[in-house]
Image (cartoon, rainbow, N blue to C red; front, side, top):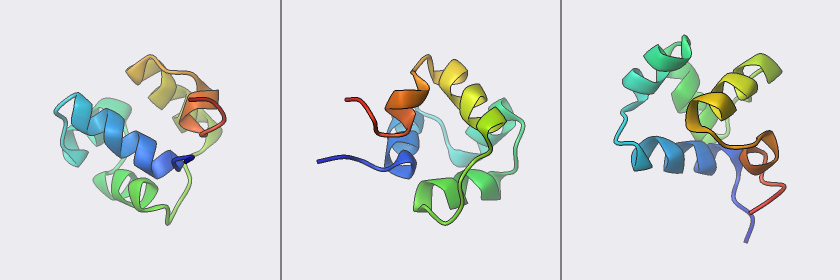
Length: 68
């Protein structure tokens, strides 16, 4: 079963023991952005995707659900 970007982001955040506010601060975005992304109500920009991938040391393909 493929997981969505939001599910993967939430999984990464929880694995690191981060709340939405802490992750938002680390990424330089608002807390509402994290919440919207995790619920699938909004998509991050390419710049934000790259920042997320670098922060969590994962690939863009994995974040997008293209690889396991």
